[in-house]
Every structure is written in C-alpha cells, then in structure tokens.
Image (cartoon, rainbow, N blue to C red):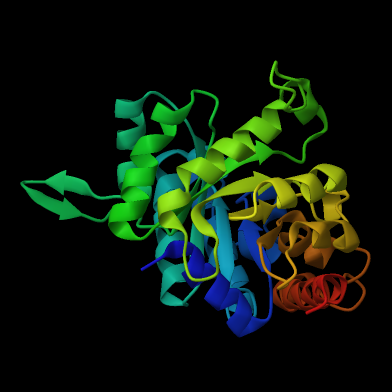
Length: 308
C-alpha cells in the first residue's frame, strides 16, 4: 500500500487534481445552519460540523481529497477536536483521501507523539489503536531530518504520506525560504533536495514518493524550478483562486504525463455561495449547489491548463 499511488489513482479515476480545504471558520457557516445551534463553543462546533459534512456530501463524488486545517478545529476546544474526528470519519466513509493540515515539526520523540494519532497508531494496553487515521499530514521541516524521521517511519509502516513545507504561497515566505545558502541554493531548494532524499524508499508505481512537498501556486517560477529539481516529489499546491494562483501557473507543477500535483482550494469552495459568480444563481440555503458548481468550474479550468 502506497499513499501517493492511492491519491494519484483517485485523481485519475475522477479526472480531477484538486482537494477541497475545510477550515471550519464560524463566519463561513451559512445562517441557515447557524440558527439551529446556540453560540457556545459546543454549538459553534456543531454548526461547523454540519457545514463540513454537507460540503463533503456536495463534492465527494467529484473531488478526490479533503484537507482539514487543524488550527480552526483546535480553536473550538474539545468540541472542535470532536468535530475534526467526525469530519475525518465521514470523509473516509465517503471514500475521500483525508489530509491533516497540522504542519507539525519538533524533536524526534515529540514528533513520534505527533505522528501517532494522525498517521500512526497509539499503543493502549499492548495493542495498537487508530485515533484519527488520516492519510496524509503536513510537516514543518525547520528542525531538520530528525524532526521528520518519525513521520517517515509511520508512513512506511502504515501506508501513509506527508507533505513537507517547501515553498509556501504567503507573501512573506521569501524572508526565509528564498535566502541563498553557501552552496548556492536557496533554502526552499535545499528543502526540496532533502524531501527527495527522505522519500527515496517510498516511491510508488508512478515514480512519486509518499514524502512530498507543499509548493504554492503564487510563485510560478519557483514551482517550475522545483518540478525539475524534484522529479520524484508530488506537490500539494495551495494558493489557487482567492490568493491569486492561476491555472496556467499551476500547470507548471505537473510533469509530461500530466501528473505530479494536487491543487487546494478552501475559501473559493467553502464560500462559493457568497461569491459574485454564484450568489445570484443560488440562495444561501443552496450553498452545497454553489460549492459543487465552483468545484466543477475549477476542475475544468485546471484540466484545460494542464492538458487533461
């Protein structure tokens, strides 16, 4: 079992290289859901959960994967963690690949603890138990190889995958990531080289590794450079849509076989019912239809740019 093969197979099956990001922000939840619950942490978490599950219902048959941003679940306390678990379980029941956007990174022993509930197992009374059992996790490599190794071991053991922050889509990413090193490489190029090395033992039938990179759509030249520098590294590509990433730029992250990346969209899908493009066509209580319409539009635009 190879996580990246499973993801690529799913992308090919649906002819759709996209992932829906779910950031459970309360202000994104339609009023038709909010009015069902009180405004306690528990009530807000329940409203977010209903929104999450209905978004999944709207797209699970056309989008292969979902990326859940841990920060917004954690913001809602214990109820938020329960919401995360329910959302994970529901997405997996619907056949989606589930990504934990956790951006973990720490010393080895701490990372082993971080890894266990998301892509590994937790030992209870001598027996290994699944906790969230997501398919991928995002990682911060700032502390080097020993901060990534525990995740790599769990990926090998349990058929999971990881996306390592390499070149991000935010405006200030260059403050560190674009710095030149003594060897002439930028920091992001050195990280990409390390990710290629870290993933050598987890390459699958398509030539890509389950240890992969996060590379933003908002820096197309760097995306193009990294596609050549890291030929075995699959890319999780954020920054499409609201952040300004364009389909023709994103195509630079794909190889000659039209594979090599999956494109994330969060606000443009979650908030489609509020957008100028769809709010005239769909009422607020029809938010699922707006999300599905935007997902299809996004898929078709990307496929045309990539040449699928």
